[in-house]
Image 1 (cartoon, rainbow, N blue to C red):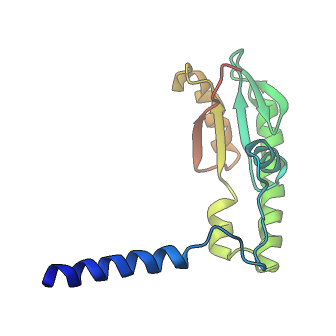
Image 2: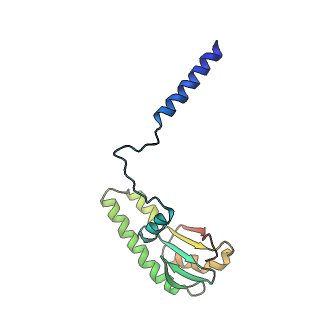
Image 3: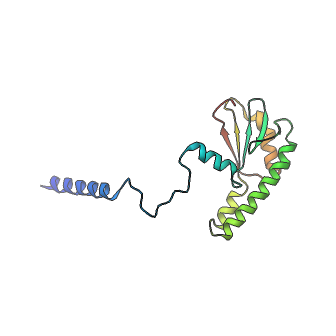
Length: 150
């Protein structure tokens, strides 16, 4: 008798959860992110809130798709990155004024920089790039696998 009560509770709980979960979107739901991964990546690349430094297999360095030196000559990277960080700071200030993000979120995010490089690279291959980012105030620095040997 006890087992049937437990089974009834489990079945009713599962049914309640299944009925409460609907695959349909509510009328007031609106999408904020593009559907396709390529569209999302493109939107992120164009956003002033995203800063990605990419290193290709020939050791060329790119900032937001623009070539800005090599892993041995990072001077152009420093100049462009300082400008990009300032633009991001302004974008975060605007988002705080508009109530989109908090001051704490802005402070945490305004200096983050991602470095994408081929998985075959060793840290020593991009150490000058990382040092250049730190020199102009970028931190923390996230290291990403570029996913291909560009």
